[in-house]
Image 1 (cartoon, one colour):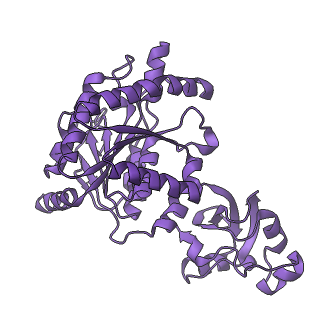
Image 2 (cartoon, one colour):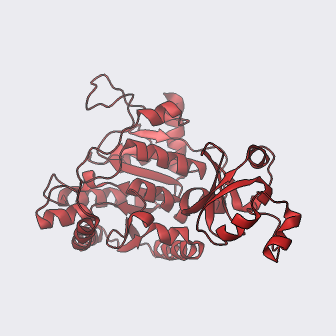
Image 3 (cartoon, helix red, strand yellow):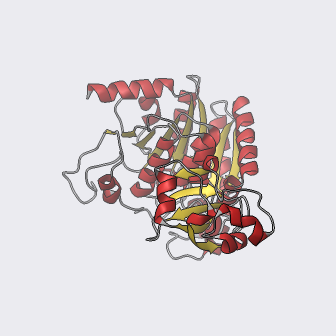
Length: 380
């Protein structure tokens, strides 16, 4: 208990740039749309921690739920994508108006930032988004980030805002991710079904058992769940940032966190922070294809720190171009690495399994020996 409190006080006292993710279940009231009272309390709590010299980036759900309420609909399950997108376009203006009103009451300006997975998969657009958010923070503005649901399709969706919030931690180089959920944190079992379930205050390492025990979203308007939060904790943990899950429906929970009180579940990060560009390759950029690698090639990549050469490639899957990210899998299909390729899929079909000395005679040119250079690769 004492060590847990020491960890909390150290982490929260040092955190200067905070990403706060708030889910639909926190922001909405049943099928009545946005809960203005709760959003007012959220704005007050965020303003309190900003008054302590911290910067806050808000990753907010709620647009689809707000739009569905205006349309007289109650849930998203089974609805066509076009209807969800229409609901998002209706609800987004209401959501931002509510934030502008509630944060304005505390003297803060807000800015809407809508992103797609494609925006962050492209390195140039990723860096442009980073510069924009940095400028907003420099001017004391609270960025309110959401997925651009109106135009997103399955191929470019983040999946849920837990995942998006983890990417925003990397995008903004934040110190901490706070997830405001409708539950107090991670439990030993589902407290909705098991009254003996106990809250886990600290997770030092995410184990396979913890991942198996996590459930998916139960809310009619939510898309995440405890499993997505744990996956996000792994991602931000690799970047050196802790994550904490707390009950966003409870008043004053954010100020309580930064006072060092033991609320919610705190996930500690890995001790060594992953390089920013490699983290982008591992967790942000979309994989455009797969390369099946033989056992010798896998051994060279995973245990010997080598680059990927064409001789280790057994099969090429996908239609990718030079510079795209691909996933390396073993013969059984298990992914073990990701990286940026120096040859297109059509070129690799011709040179897979060959020695580097044979590339030029087959392709008529040889720009690189490596298919994926070690500097452009991440072992998963």
